[in-house]
Length: 126
Image 1 (tube, rainbow, N blue to C red):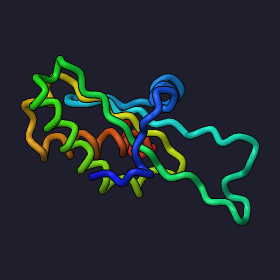
Image 2 (cartoon, rainbow, N blue to C red; image 1 turned 90 degrees about the horizontal axis):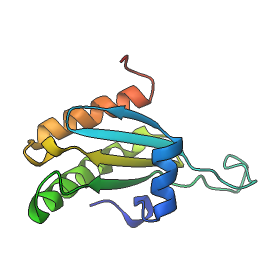
Image 3 (cartoon, rainbow, N blue to C red; image 1 turned 90 degrees about the vertical axis):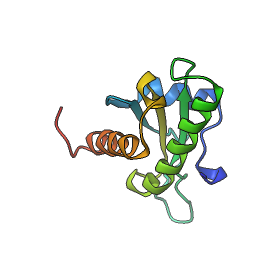
Image 4 (cartoon, rainbow, N blue to C red; image 1 turned 120 degrees about the horizontal axis):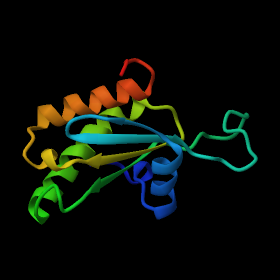
């Protein structure tokens, strides 16, 4: 399970990540990553903590029924929990599951998520 402080909950945060962020698509999912805009303060100034990386998930009815969608969300939450440290602090991450994700094995989702994150962090070519 993803800790509460690492969850994306507000509609505006989802919109920020999807509209202003970079994206990397794979066979089973699309990952959007954006930097959170922090007012006028510098997050690296002494005495201030950088906001944590937060992740949210979009799993539409195209993926499957309610049981399948819930299963996909749980798998993705578990996978993201282990990968939060790879992303810079203050990142907003939205993982959108594509229709094939409902039938995919855990390992396939993990490979696609790793490939997308690697590409977004500048480690992979198109």
